[in-house]
Image (cartoon, rainbow, N blue to C red):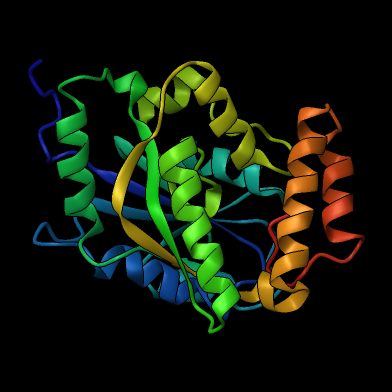
Length: 254
């Protein structure tokens, strides 16, 4: 079919934050400073702050983001951000992560190709790969596992920067305002609707803090237990308590 995507559409990047003063500037600048040839006039960054008590808000504004406030909770903050955003394409980037160089051109080119076969309400996806900003052979295994899970099972997670055309976000119901696993929930709903993700041939870079704090194998096993529990119908609140055991790490939007 004929492509309906022109390449002139606006991109909105949503960053949910809570006490992310050490990383928010780098994340915002990756959104505004790594565009390719189209300038930043077609990209906006909306930081949705959940009540930070550090310097997150001031640093986000200094880096060029617009900041809005919301109650704490990543799913809720991302949904608030989607409503505050003005773009046609909405990206959800975690505040300890960075987008790759030229991500906007990659997005435009990939979505233009997909628009020959998909309606606006079917355009969603993520980056195919994740780079963890820490050393260690086990983390390279994690990166390889992310790549294989994404390409073979079509199951990207939130740290791979999920994106939606606004029509797709609204038609699927967007992020639920649940306290935990909001990314897994929205991806699962899209897969049940029979709409596989569009995978961008690039890598999001993310902090290795959760693996460093807990250990690679414990994090992997805990994630598998959480997914099984989610499918068994355990409430998001109970899963949140299981994950954090009453001690959320610094910067967790929960």
